[in-house]
Length: 272
Image (cartoon, rainbow, N blue to C red):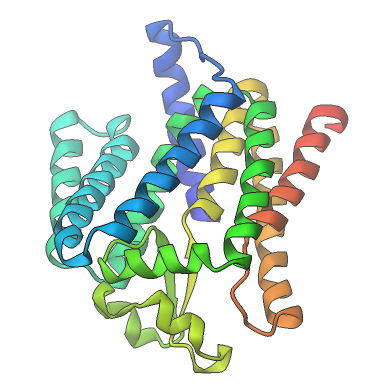
């Protein structure tokens, strides 16, 4: 989260200059379209995973993820490198993941892509709008994990070798393992001490990043860092809750992250 925050805010600072030079103004998209788009995407992906055999989906999802990772590299490098260099790195990153997906490479590309998305999409929303969105998604996260929907979807995506989540192996040598070897369904059925990897959803990092960037564009870098610090505290509390209270059972990380981010937002708005 710290690395993603640094990348996102550094890119947002460069993007701010570009937006000002081009005369762009944030459209401040309302909460309705955001919620509609999010749940629309979730429903479409769920229906596709349910009705279409994975054998026919694997290549499609892998190509889509490779394009997404290439886009992330392009966004992060585009403001600081010549365009030819950015495009070259983007193509190399996408093809490398597509043909040689390893856990360490997947994590790095996902980190870069989330930071890039945060630096761009955070410009489109006001902090209040996105804070409300995070709280709504946090409630969805609880329900989806409670009834097994989130684990089922993550398992199906992992079987297609296209998992939008960070993977943390317990053993150092397993960082070079193939992404194909990670199966969320198998991990969820094992006891905590028997699992070879831990999984953290990309949205648990991406959503607070977008909030921090949105705050950056409205009130500046110090306020964005405060939001990031509170979000990090929420992520750490999620880990402690899972470790101590749930004894390693799967849990939604976004609710505590959204709660502490809300505290950070209130501090920035009314105290700082």
